[in-house]
Length: 460
Image (cartoon, rainbow, N blue to C red; front, side, top):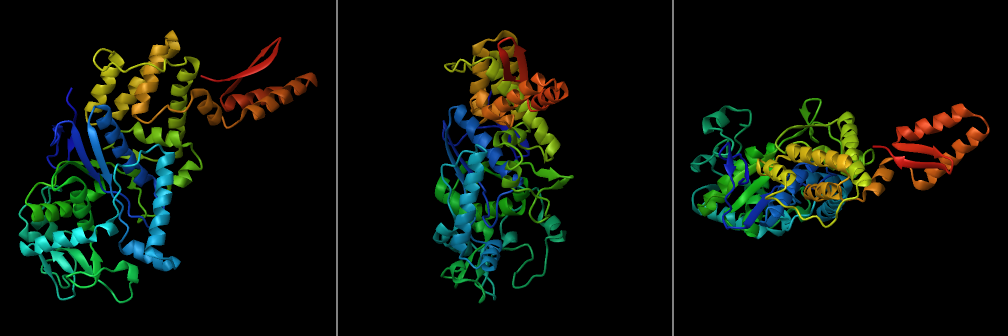
């Protein structure tokens, strides 16, 4: 089956045909680093982690670029509030982001450009737009994009100019020629810190948000590349404006496929910092192990809204434990090589992933393999479970180690409780002995009594 996925530009599921056979260029809009990442950010990075993993597993040579926005109004405001430089703030937040993504098993991108390193390229694109009549400098010093001068505006979002003009996005004109126009270069304000300003042919200032990604994607992947991605909230206006800028300057398509992941929702509202209903990755990892959080996200298809709750995470934890239990009870053949052509489980896994990166169906195959391994004790079955799980970034911790850690008790603690139970039985305190057994069972530990003594194992 040919790899097919939903293209936001065409609004259909399209066959994937890269520009260059066997190679893929993918640019994804990354974090604005003024604060810690929340689960919504993790969901975006996880979605494209799965996509790039499957592209590589399918034999493609992938260049995956995910940028960092390290200059904007929120960053400036936060740095000033904390009394530190912009670079100090952004370095701190980038370091925290890398720690969080590493904990979740999200692979780093091949390139991670920072906006502040590409200001000359941004100014070059703005100059090209101005020469083509697509940009103008207003009396206040800002350089704006002339939306009505670009004939293709609205093709990604499906919004017409008349719809946009009548919408809530239209604000006071200010020095813009049209309310729809957006800023490419912001003239510096007197009270802004010095490290938020650059000299340019347009005066001292800094880039607008949208032009940053146009410059970074072009520098990394060329004027046209295969896949452009990001969260669904970026489709308009950010990605629409990127198209207008990049295609207005080059005259070429920016990206052939546009991919957007669904939101994380809390009580039927999008999780976001602006709404105040967000949980940072670190807050969640304080309650749940990283692989449970990863499994919770991966088992939902990337375009589907992800509903957050402790109930869902606990269910994910129990489900992941079932897979690890199968690996523990049936040690896998580590030398298994995936036969995509002939093995029925590999075939179904591949068919699921080739159909718009269908992780729910792919994970269903993992549970089929776990059931087969439990039933037959065939190391080939658990070997496939291990290898196919690895493609999704799952099941890579030694099974016994994961299950013991998941129980929340170390070997010494368990042995101490077994000794306490033995002493309780010797003292004929059978209620206490039974309670210790029940407490251990609640944490997944099954005690087995014999004439040789008491042993324990992780429950299935």
